[in-house]
Image (cartoon, rainbow, N blue to C red):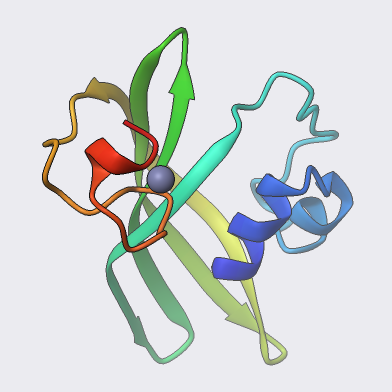
Length: 115
Ligand SMILES: [Zn+2]
């Protein structure tokens, strides 16, 4: 899952397609319009046998607003490799608290960092 997130950040479409299950994989993937991700927060992850779920939020900045994409993704394991099957996604803007730790993972308070 994290490797797919890194691939999104690095615009590595071929890796994303390679780890996408054939039943739901798109013909091609254009990442030209994808946001500049600043952080990832995995809220929950579990696996049972050959199926797994990851619930995460990925943060980005767009038009001077902080936004996040939240998704519950379903993964399936075939021949020892995990594949992304599908996910329920929502995309929202939000305001981080000034004293919260920054989304970028710097460990500093938001107001002293990306705020
Ligand atoms: Zn920051």
